[in-house]
Image (tube, rainbow, N blue to C red; front, side, top):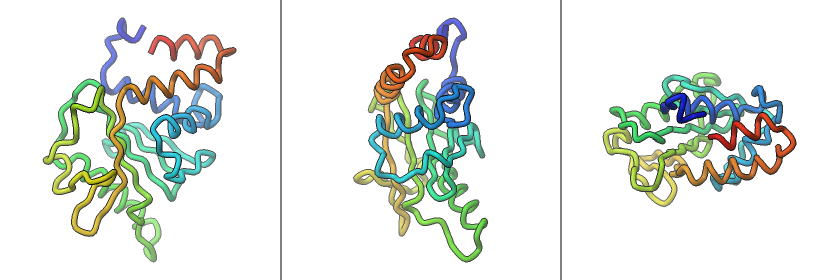
Length: 182
């Protein structure tokens, strides 16, 4: 069904975000989000999955997940879309600025941000123009005094995630069929 609908990057993001949202129409609470975190190997990040908001196209961020203290930025490049000028850099700055302005007495600690870069395989990495001076080093984006957690995830992570949740929702035929089609 997704091939027939001529799925574009925005539709992939919309589908993934709808599953990740604990308040989504799947009525499975945080099941999908917890399994996504496990499949991506980021369970040590400390996101409170029972208290999150999931946004799509939030300030141009493909998928943005936050519990108010922890912030996950997902940049979706499944269909090899090109990086925009200062794209990853802008997303990080947006989240840092918004959250430091919510409480004037504190600023967002860099360990509260995680950037996930989703591509079909490991061949594509963020361009230097997108990173605007950040360097990828040992699971972090580093620039001057900034050190932001970073993880490159690929479609295999998504497929692993969906395979795990399909086991959990085996009796929910409609939802299971949709995920199988994806």
